[in-house]
Length: 153
Image (cartoon, rainbow, N blue to C red; front, side):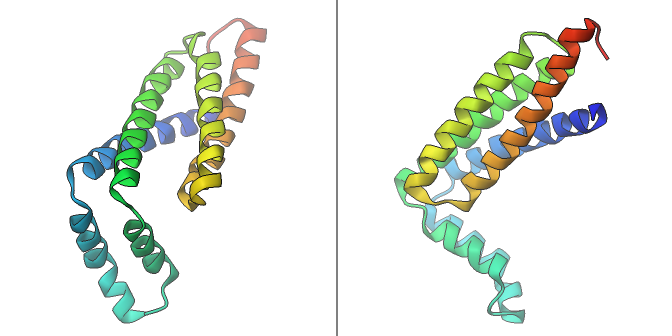
């Protein structure tokens, strides 16, 4: 389980970096440009298979972005990513503060994502929420073991 925890930390770090990058792209790229990119990326697949659910989902997701949603998504992704990177750094250094802090912050994100889901019904939010809950379970387990044993792995 500890190896799974370490893998999850590195995955969280990568996801955090990707979220920061994606948030930056959303902040500085116009809505019409996002649609053009989505069309460019999905066109070859849709020519081959006009009913491709992944390509259609990507296009539909981008088309649903209004200016307010795009700004929110950008700020949310960059903030979520930055917080993950800070927490991952603490967890990798086995800092005791990082375990309860990570649980509290991720718990807050889960609650907020559930609230936002009731408004948006975004599958993306469900995915982020599921990953955050799984990561919280791993963090909780590691924290309990660390407190009981009193030593770093």
